[in-house]
Amino acid sequence: MNKYIELVDKKLNEYLKIEYPEDIFKSMKYTVTLTGKRLRPVMCLEACRIMGGDINKAIPTACAIEMLHAQSLIHDDLPCMDNDDFRRGKPSNHKVFGEAIAVLAGDALLSFAPQVIIEKSELSSDIILKVLHEFVKSAGAYQLIGGQVADILSENGRGKLNDSDEETLKYIHTNKTAVLFKLALKTGAIIAGAGVNEITEMENFGQKFGLAFQIYDDILDEISTFEELGKTIGKDKEAGKLTYVTLYGLDNARAKVKELIADCHNIIDKYNSDILKSILNKIVDKIK
Ligand code: GRG
Image 1 (tube, protein in one colour):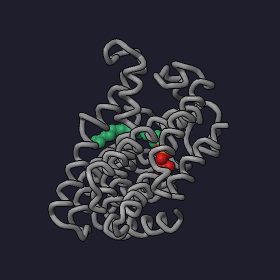
Image 2: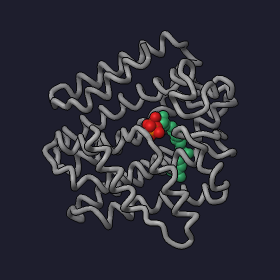
Image 3: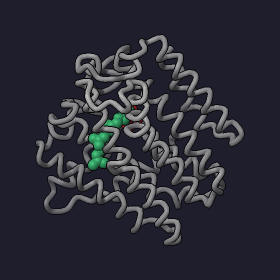
Image 4: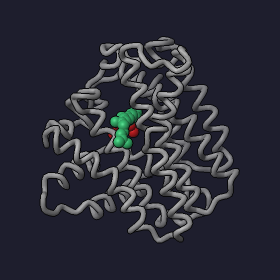
């Protein structure tokens, strides 16, 4: 896992060159290169490896997905959204560069990421097109942006899907969080040339993992510390946000994470991936 992270960090630094006007490139690079867990690029590379592919071919896509993730964090922290002053243990992007540059840095990452996939991938144009299709679908209003909008509306109990908290919560978790894990695992498998069934298995794994990860994130928002998470805690409750914890309580949330992680193990056990297994185990260990 550390080898993957080193590789991704090296390439992210290489791709994000600082040119005139420096502020925008510095702002883009700031959030992307701050220390994060790098779960999405690691999952992309590992999905490629377990499907028999060459991980070097998946590196541009893995980095592009981390850029998309960083973009969503920059915009999520803005005063008009979650209004968070800290991210990854450091001041949020807009606190360092100002709101105008932070908005533009997010926008710029959103267009630079697919550019990296196109320019840096040593893949056939057929595979690049498939990867780009997954990328733009995931980032758009039918998925990531839709998830964020439903999340914002939930603060005031508005915009419920079918008037149901349960359905709304599943929509938010699927589109705001699971989407990028699914994108990472699916594109890793596509780059490896995996078959339809294996690609679907990776997508199912990403969906279950994403739901578990968002509930885990919401549990940590209640039980963890600023020092451990690197961001302000307890904000969900304060904002009256719809989360698994606010809806069902901590004990039920812990039980749900364990159930989803067990499902994830059932999907990937046959692939013998120590990396994916250790990610799953860490999630369960942290909420004990
Ligand atoms: C695509 C234009 C466009 C906008 C995106 C702002 C937004 C719309 C979406 C926000 C989505 C969001 C912030 C989801 C939270 C997902 C989540 C649990 C993030 C934390 O992930 P970690 O813990 O973070 O993997 P690190 O820092 O370790 O990478």
